[in-house]
Image 1 (cartoon, helix red, strand yellow):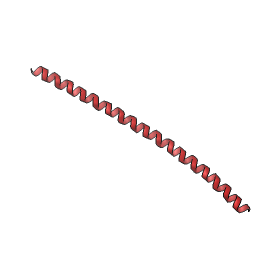
Image 2 (image 1 turned 135 degrees about the vertical axis):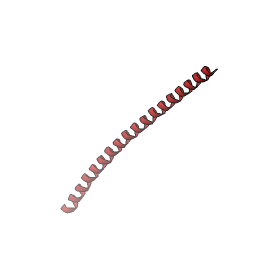
Image 3 (image 1 turned 90 degrees about the vertical axis):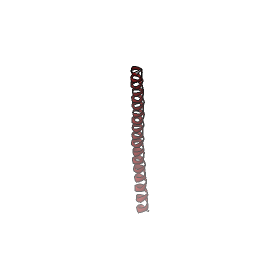
Image 4 (image 1 turned 30 degrees about the horizontal axis):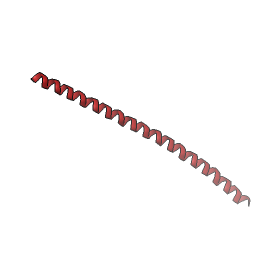
Length: 66
């Protein structure tokens, strides 16, 4: 009887460890996805600022010329 209980406890612990490992994998995947979005967002902000700067420079030149 004790052997069955011990085996059940071992199996239960194994299942818990497998669930925990899967949750850790999912959390890691979510963090990696978030970093990718942040990188794309910063690139988009940089591009937008670059184009805005060029536009302001053009407007400044037009105002000084006229």
